[in-house]
Amino acid sequence: MFTIIPVKPFAQAKTRLAPILATEERTRLSRFLLKRTITLARQVGEVVVISRDNVVRRVAKSAGAWALVESGVGLNQALSQAVEWVILRGGKAILIVPNDLPLLTVGDLRELINLDRTTPKMVVAPCHRREGTNALFLQPPNLIPFAFGPASFSQHQRLARAVGVQPIIYESPTVALDLDVPDDLIYAKTLSSLADQWPGVLCGQGE
Image (cartoon, rainbow, N blue to C red):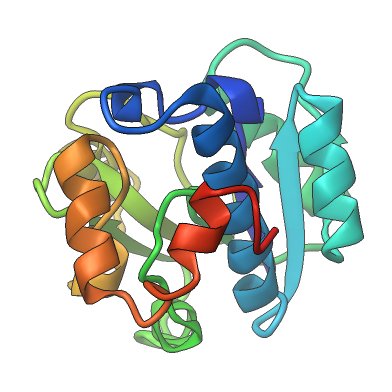
């Protein structure tokens, strides 16, 4: 089983947090979250980070992940590229998670993977706005084409049904919260057990 984490260049990540975080702070936060996500994902399988940025790839390798050079344009092409790489290495299932889920737990990852035992299978977890997809488990890895973007939560369900697979919905507040806008960050820092680490991350420490 492979977890795939697509990652933008750190300096270009989370631009909608600019009203409350400077570029340097967003970079540190993205780096911190990437390392945290890799650490969690390595407990359930191998981890692949795909990015066009060499700094991101170096951080991924130092944290124990495979690092792929993104060659396409856009998130869905990047994920398709990573899936091809996984299949060539004999991978039978993938879990896609973004790099901005501050409350994600190992328990979430294990439940996403182990829900139901049927094959083929798709498990999808929505964001807290129930529009986007915050986690996607596919077995086999190329079960459906990717539709990340507007309304991806409903789009991925539609694509699964189109190939005769009933999508399984995973509801979890720790997966649902992503960091898109300032209110998300404020809410996450209020809830997270990591809250005491965050001031250090945002002040240049704790990386």
